Amino acid sequence: MKISISRAMSISGGNGPILDPNRNKLTKTEDFTATVWNDASPNLPTVTANAITAPDGTLTADLLTAATGGTSSMKRQNVSSIANTVHYMSIFLQAGTSTQTRLLLRNVTGGVNIADATITWTAGVPSISITAAGTFVVMSPSSGWYRAYGFAATGATATPTLSMSIFPDTSLGTGSVYAWGAQLERYSLTPYRRVA
Image (tube, rainbow, N blue to C red; front, side):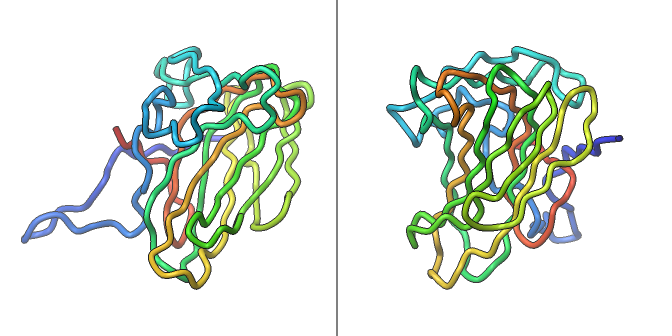
């Protein structure tokens, strides 16, 4: 499978940039060592930066290793959004030592998990099950990488804060997973867009 990756962030018009409603709302999308991903402190995974070649051929993919015994150990980033709007979360994953990895999109303001799934790794191949809500899909592999994505509506809460979380190991709490290219966008799934 060919993975499409776009670095464009906006389209310029005669009067300046035209904002793309599908743009990636996250920042530091390839750097899980960044403090913006540390909202879940103190139960943070260890991050080995630039541990493996990413889907775009650069040495920019990180290894996330759960804190000892930390099945709730996660990397999480918060963003502000709008009510009653479908959001798509996505991330590229490759198997590490973990047997289960969790992905979660939460309406923090409303206190509701709106998309929640567990990925089970078997010989490096993921299968996905919905934990509580939302719809999730794992796309076909490319060089051992899988793009997992889920989508759900934010609900009626006005200007909600959303959080996207990655739990490396929800089975034993000591395993690891490779991660790269996190994305959160409105309305539809689009090719990955890097945000520094």
